[in-house]
Image: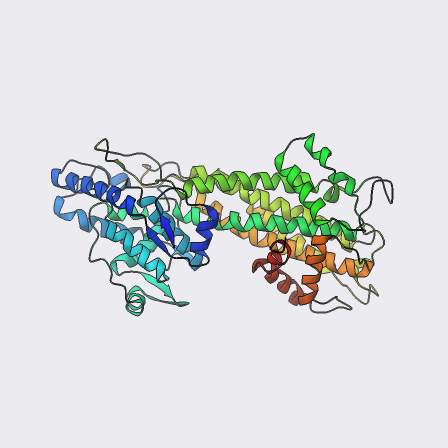
Length: 504
């Protein structure tokens, strides 16, 4: 059980909730703060003093006063009118992430929502009744309005949900899970639920978590390729990387040396050649730059996971509500563009290593396309084509979203972040990059078999043996997509990761 208090939620804990369904509860010490903010909102309603989002319209309509008797109806109308998402539904784990992040933000006590509304979100999360939220439709400021509106509709019995893998009306899902909807929202509650960056943050958090693990695997696929091509280990010498000083580069070189310990298949400069091509020799610099990027992005994501992103912000100790811009997604939009670029570079250099393995002019004596009787057999020729296609697709997807902005709400909201688009693009790039890394593993394992090497590195041996437990050596032309998809499954399911890293 994870206790949510608005502070200290870390990426690994978030994944336990979003992906692995760990249950949550609200910290008792936060409940009084939530109540104090709600008391403030009720006092504003009674006083009829105009405060944005409590007794006014929204966006360009913020100057329109709302009658005291209509403040609750205003919030229901907000959810209905702002639920304009299109496209495919987000995965359940992404929406679970949105839910836990929104609760974690609201328990800080700066929004004015009732505790019972937050507890209803927690009940839905713990019973795994997950709103249907569509992927497209967010500008990333004023927060993720459309996605969070879809997330919030079920609280009042509207919209759709997934329950036990099936999509159905909220009424049906709540009936099956024995959940009672909230009769109605109170003042400001609709705005509190949807004014935030939790859609982009959930997507980005999942991508950065998976990307960190993928890069660790990419270091192993690199190490296997180094062995298959009898690469020069001197380029990974500790002091070479220390004199430059970049932490990521230093750590990647160390990781590769660790993966290759006790290998008899790597060489030293001058043994076979003086130096390797950049895709082998400069891998610590390239992987390391992505590693440094991931470290930076994870830090930004974890800050946002514990951030108050509402508007207005209620400061009960000062007795004021301030209209500001904490909903603006720019602090994440830039990192998510960076994430897409960093992932793309992992795929770029991996594809070049695949080319070196299958190209007889570059592979140090391996047969063309890694099969006997080339000509009759095409072997791994089109594996490289497929990797090249994914890499080229990534280059298009890596164009930054954050440099774009379209004014909305009659120019009241005249600069937006497009951060949710950036997060979604980063997820697409992640999937493409993972598949390229899977192809490198597949190709390197084939090359190692052809070499007949027996004394592999400690970790490359684990990877090779695990791959061969699931995917055979390819003797002659076969339907290759079966092997590619299986290899990708081994990466995506964490089976290969656990085989390498969970045993020491």
